[in-house]
Image (cartoon, rainbow, N blue to C red; front, side, top):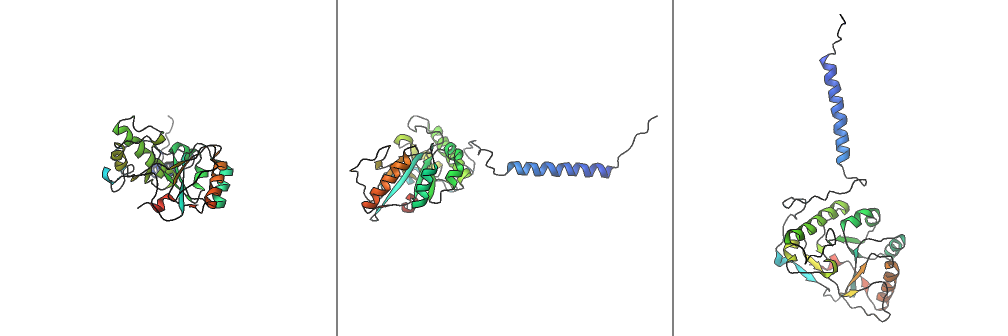
Length: 243
């Protein structure tokens, strides 16, 4: 009869402990933030990760299109986030241009290295999927805003406090969703700059200037910065002028 070799219980226990340790380390490594894995997009209405610590009331929401100030400043805001470039980075970094970015989380994630490298930029809410907020239900509105806030916080490390409705599709109903998601300021604009900059354009103190992340942005922004300097104005960070 073949003799069965018995393995000491202590050896078995040691092997199991070793395997458990390896699995635990692997699990911990997989769960840590990584540039190779996209942030989670699940929406949990009552989760502390999607709702702000101190929810606002709808009556707290402030709608602005221009800032009242005596300072000779304007505010550069750029939407969507689809196209960024080395030329744009050089312009922003060389002149230290303060920028408020209203981009969808997917766009920020796709170009996260570029965005994270900008030292004088804040990231605000432009919905999660560029939804027109006047055409969807209140719950969908809340989903769009809260999910975008959660994802931007995961990517950048700071939660947005402003919201810009895509194409300016603003409704008073949006105030409720904004309050639930901790967004106090609904930001429209007073000046729009597309591909071409009008030669005779005049800017005024407190103007909120709307650009888009498109291929022509570096050239258009350079022209605007030159005009601002000639008119005795300079860009400022929008967050610094919100109370």
